[in-house]
Image (cartoon, rainbow, N blue to C red; front, side, top):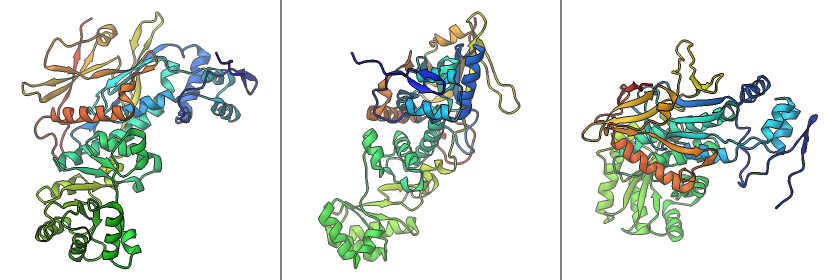
Length: 466
């Protein structure tokens, strides 16, 4: 057995830190807002910090024009939770900056989340007021996770919601994520993962590929073309290095001449050509005719150039084989956040029994009490309603449907501090991708229209008897 860690002196307190996390990742504990820690300090001082509490994550409404949302980032939340540890460096900084007092620093040194988390499976579609994640434990344990949970779920779900609209518009054609240069470097990694959850086939981001086992794509940009004296030599170089199955960028100069040079360089077995500018609807048809005339009938056409779901839908009748999307997907295609909130809905009263609590301020009301969730399906397996189950806490927490038309939506993610790793890593992304495909297929007909409309299904409340 290894010797215990020596105490770290923080201010006037000698604090014994818990053993380091087995993870090699940096601590995620300071990816938070200051008021989470100052609330903790006050609650520790007045004795309420250890009250049993239930927090819920939900969106009050969908962004304008959206008929459904897509939950993404759950796996990243769980991965971040394993690294939510206040180590020596974090504690010294908090003490030096006087963010919290010594007693709070001592609590943080021992902090481990020992509560439970449940929620919608990653990849599931959601609707207004859907309780997509439920965090339960002491107030102290749960409140510290608010900012981390929201920052991950709001961003990832916004990207996945936009990506789902794009893959829906593309029908069976692959959509490729290539937006890294349009986002913060770490946001780009998360965006690539979220896009794949919602059906994108691959990403250009190598860190996302390494971290989560995502397929990666990429060949050459216009800079490579301009480096060479002419297209012929550039294409010859790329084919010699990457083989005839590569994708050649044919719109640096004249598209027709570029296609001719590409086929001359690789032969009729050329893998693909890419168009990144101009009137894509017209050019794709012309390029397809030209490729077929040159005998390159199996050569695919990839299009990019500031595509979004509307541009993809406009190309539905064109002979496009794959779409490359950048800026629109990593920015949520006009909706860069889902507006999710993290609200305390129940906490233990004087006798230890959970009591509903709710915010009543205008336009930002919340509904007190723990909720369970299900989706009502019709005889064809299509969603009819999002059903929120409310009532006495014991009844809600143990609820199981009598009605076979109700599909329960909450799954366990963390049990007494133990993370279910099936939702993490490459396996978690694959599982989320499958869940999204099946969940989106449940939507009622017309729910995937891009025109502005209300949520695809209503959210209704069912109250259990005590």
